[in-house]
Amino acid sequence: MASSGMATITPAHLEQLRRSFRGDIIDPGSPAYDDARRVWNAMFDRKPALVVRPTSVADVQAAIRFGRERDLEIAVRGGAHSAVGHSTTNGGLIVDMGRMNTVQVDPQRRLATAGGGALLGHLDIAAQEHGLVCPVGVVGHTGVAGLTLGGGVGRLQRHFGLTIDSLRAVQLVTADGQVVRASRQEEPDLFWGLRGAGANFGIATNLELDLHPFGGTLHRGVHVWPAADVHEVWETFRDWAASAPETVSAIFTVGIGETEADDPGTIANEPVVIVSYNHSGAATDVERDIAPLLAGPRATKVTATSEPYLTAQGSSDLTLAWGSRTAILGGYVRDCSPAVLDAFVEHVETAPAEGSISVTMLGGAIGRRDDADAAFTGRAHPFDVSPDTSWADPAEDEANLAWVRDAMAIVEPDLLPGRYINELSDEGPDVTAAAYGEAKLERLRALKRGWDPANVFRLNHNIAP
Ligand SMILES: Cc1cc2nc3c(=O)[nH]c(=O)nc-3n(C[C@H](O)[C@H](O)[C@H](O)COP(=O)(O)OP(=O)(O)OC[C@H]3O[C@@H](n4cnc5c(N)ncnc54)[C@H](O)[C@@H]3O)c2cc1C
Image 1 (tube, helix red, strand yellow):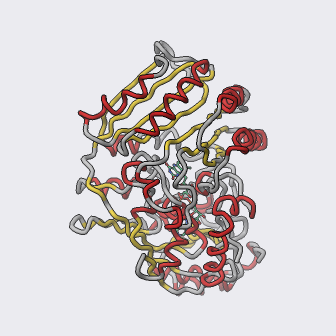
Image 2: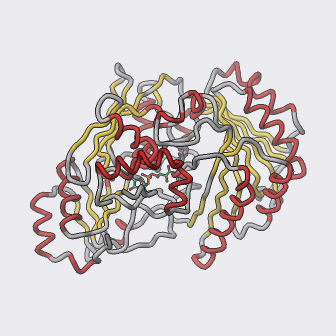
Image 3: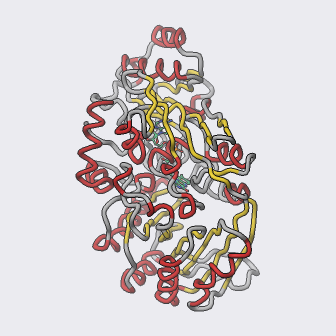
């Protein structure tokens, strides 16, 4: 279905929408338009015919009805962090859920109900008021809905699992305007698909999430080595991953050392290896649990802090602020061979911008569930490899996209089944097939045919019906 462009919306159409819609309606003539159409990744500078901000389920129903009647491509927006511009459109309708952002916490039931436009920061703060937590991502301005419907990884992933593992139910407005509640008991098949391919089936108006008691302190460390130590550091990291308790989440990164004047131990502008960890257990256990990381070569720089969970969760909000251009890809591996590690080092040296390649420790609570439990695929694998890069100049878009693709080519022969769709700047049928595998894709297609046969919700890693 092609978008029919801006000319389809007349003042009479807008008047008709206003009769059934209580939220904001922003058209290209509105002073708010340029701000309303922006998304986090500056690569996607698109011009929708209309942006609407619903305030209720009825508004969401009216928005979908309006978009369908006018044959407008519908983009659904939570936190606007999509790596591939899925929450914006040229000439279509953006349904921006940003006004439906409340989070209610029921501490007795250890349950949070987050609106379809809530951000991670809203959820983190509301849950921590009661000494509770939902494991989510690492940047406060990411959307709860977009992150959760794709999977959700973060600082507590090995302790409490993926965000979808804490998802109890989703309230959804479907393509035909029905309001559906999906959980393990109600519409269980839809609930299965929502956990990993969720943007395909409707607009989530709220998500019910299990909360876990959590004291609220994270013990965090960063160790830096020169790239010459990459083989030994990897072996240390890999062995640590096999035995580390679930309270440890850690990332091994090959990147370029930061320029920090007068900071001893900093290896500026040279390739480095960095291991950063978050320990969510007792302070008294940290020394014991981190000891295996110290068994390898001596790091040239070590920092360690203990800080409130909310401080850690907000710590990247400014460095990863809106407005840069970013590309990211990812896939799962069992190990990194010496040749792969050498190629990583060489590749970051030739990055056109600030490129790095991260290998995230999975396992722990993530790996305890069966892969068949949800559409999300790959939870049983030990490591997730993900190159990413950021730059400012539009003329460098192609070079940076090529750089992340070339980084993935290094590990291509070692890739295990599945991809995490939230870390993919590439899209298309091959990408979707790689993300879910043939058997799950078939099941997802059947679900899509049932819930969205006209593919109204197609700005996502799309399951073609
Ligand atoms: C700075 C940054 C940090 C990140 N950190 C992490 C991290 O730590 N862990 C992690 O797992 N991921 C992380 N991500 C990836 C992130 O999870 C995905 O980009 C996710 O899709 C963002 O969701 P969103 O709501 O912010 O984005 P949007 O661009 O608004 O939406 C993304 C997709 O979800 C759909 N969607 C959004 N809201 C709804 C809704 N209410 N109902 C139905 N569909 C909806 C959209 O249509 C779109 O297809 C990060 C991304 C960025 C840019």
